[in-house]
Length: 492
Image 1 (cartoon, helix red, strand yellow):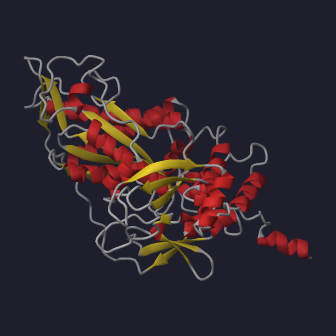
Image 2: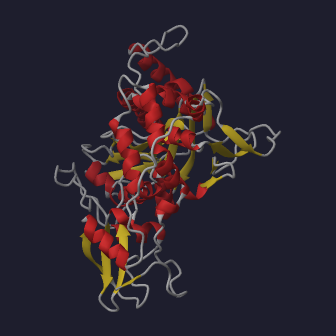
Image 3: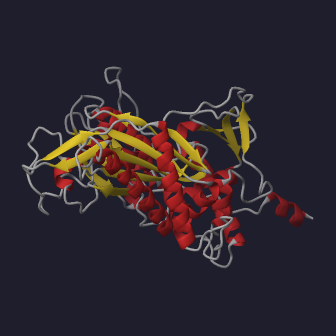
């Protein structure tokens, strides 16, 4: 039995090579520091403890992609080459591998089965720090704020269509609730893909589309003013803000990890000797040129609305890349490295205006940031509105708009509103679509490999891996240890 571990020839430009996550920076930090981190959290939150979903996310990540915890076997009938693919954790928080798979899968679903062949514009709404903190753990409030924002956006398109355009126009949106910023900070904000125009029912029963003109800077500013006013009014109605000063009134429902959330929003450290300090920044001298105002962007009292990114109807590859950007995981393994003193260096995708290009985190500080990014289970972070809503009357016609098949006339029936297609794509399909890698092509003979079995029994796992001279010991977490200051005290 031969196992392929690397590219066998130069003929295959993009061949599959196992990434071995157990050798990466992120896996090492979690493996060595997790139990100590959880012990510290339990000491701080002894009344309610650490939420179970946070513990599970970390514990499952340690097993993700490790062959010693189970794998699927693929085999080539032509030459007998085997390929072992480790099981994944399917985490929703920070796992780069599972987040990348979910990114590719959801983006493909949006392109193939949701977004019509019409112009699309991205709208990005961010919030003041205090509201980001609240939205991070109060999902009911987050959905209410999203509803306020979406109603204003849909109304904006309808209002613009009442001029020279057709009456009774409708549009649709897909919103991704992102929880992270570029520096692994907690930053709840909304990325919305809006159909850039309106659909209207013609007298003959067919559905037509009228594209909207690009919004002006003044229109974006006016829309942000409406959104800000309505959001503040919502907070006042719920007793979360004073009408005069706008101070928070209700902190009694704060979650167990509220200290981590608050510190992450402000880009500070929550625990340890550096508790309360700002995250260490590295980089060059700050730029002296004033920040130019970006087109179609407005700012108002901490609220920020940006709408300068658009995609034409025929440019589906660009739209799929934009969908992946919205759905990307918060952590990229290639942006992490170790410094000589053991700290973790996180490279920013884009340097900040103050010259910061990297941030430096102690291993425990990195786990703080990751814990704050983990969403609660059963919380939906992709939301549809307007004609793209699940039960919208026109949805079946809208998602098929612009394809070669003729759009059916009249209101869609309940059966036609159901969009056919796979609910789960295979690993091989996603690798081919996202990375252009054919993982089922044999690296030795070029034949097709097929799935043989899923190996989950520990004795069988060890026997196969030992036979192939591969690491067969399951991942073990390093035992918890007291903070250095307690070690020194006990030594005395």
